[in-house]
Image 1 (cartoon, rainbow, N blue to C red):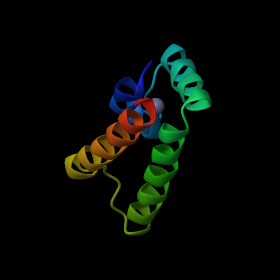
Image 2: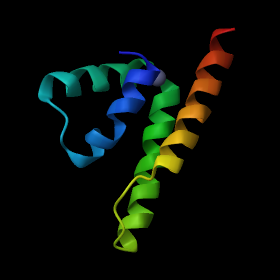
Image 3: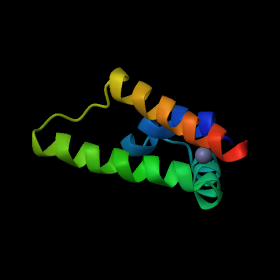
Length: 79
Ligand SMILES: [Zn+2]
């Protein structure tokens, strides 16, 4: 699993709809990728804010912004 794969599973992860075998891969990736841990924490906090307003949905816009942020960081760390 890479960062792109992780991000594509992020909403399912929070929805609890991720298959157990995939969950293992997600957790393994989180163990080795600090960038995705930051994204996970940020997303969790965002969701909690939304939940407080009884809105529980990760918008495409948010997903897009998270995606570009993480990819920028990952690419920067590799070069
Ligand atoms: Zn990652």
